[in-house]
Amino acid sequence: MVTDLKNHARTTSEGSRLAKYAEHWQLPDAETRYARSRSRTRFRRYDQEDALVGRWLRLCVPGATVLDLPCGTGRFSELVARCGHRLIRADLSYRMVAHARQLGPSEHVLGDLCCDLANPPMRPASVDIVLVWRLFHHCRTPEDRAIVLEQARRLARRYVILSFYNRASVTYWGRRLIRAMLRREPKCRGAIWTSDLRAAADQADLEPIEIYHYRPGLSINSAACFRVRETSIGTALASVG
Ligand SMILES: C[S@@+](CC[C@H](N)C(=O)[O-])C[C@H]1O[C@@H](n2cnc3c(N)ncnc32)[C@H](O)[C@@H]1O
Image 1 (cartoon, protein in one colour):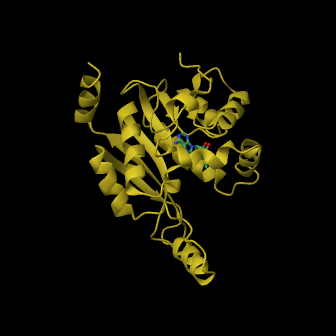
Image 2 (tube, rainbow, N blue to C red):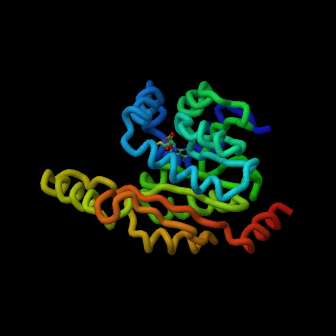
Image 3 (spheres, rainbow, N blue to C red):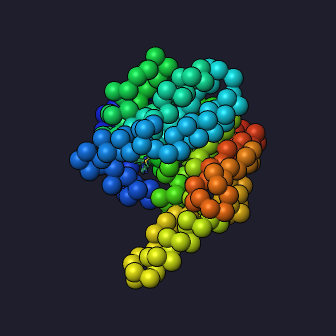
């Protein structure tokens, strides 16, 4: 269906506001290092994230279509298969998506795309769930975050799942303090208040189903699952005629 692993990035993303967030991931060996750091043995929250994302993916009955954008090295491929869903993987980094493609199982994978989240070459409301994992916290401005939410909502018929960095946490303020003492640029500039996420999602016609904080008040890591407002699906489809 959408197996298109040609370097779409060159034609679709140059100059996009979000393209800069992929630069780091285009470096040699970035994919190998990332895959290793997210492996089950090394990544502390692996099972917790798997369980959380799995619970949200199962809001749809088996057979749903999931777009994992950015898919990175494809660590959710197996989980989507276990849920009985079909998967489209996409990432702006050719290296990352090529790495994901080597992973099994792949019978449920409809295709792999190298594309920019700011400009995905897909029709509105063409998938059931859009999964945006570990990208939102890189976005440093409200405008960039709005693009992520709008694009995810445009493509999703049912749900948008995303992870984010939460300002209301000891980790965030601890990191800020240490950087200030070292007179270095602040870290975690993409961290936001949950209220700001709710407001931005509302603007994008997304309603929260659940906002999850791994260790409330302590951990910077949080995640959210949104439902696409039905009225917005009609509008998205009408816009393509
Ligand atoms: C931290 S990794 C997360 C990957 C995966 N979701 C995971 O949780 O393992 C961030 C990914 O975002 C991708 N990325 C960054 N900016 C992007 C953009 N504008 N469009 C599509 N992918 C982008 C990078 O190439 C990288 O693979």
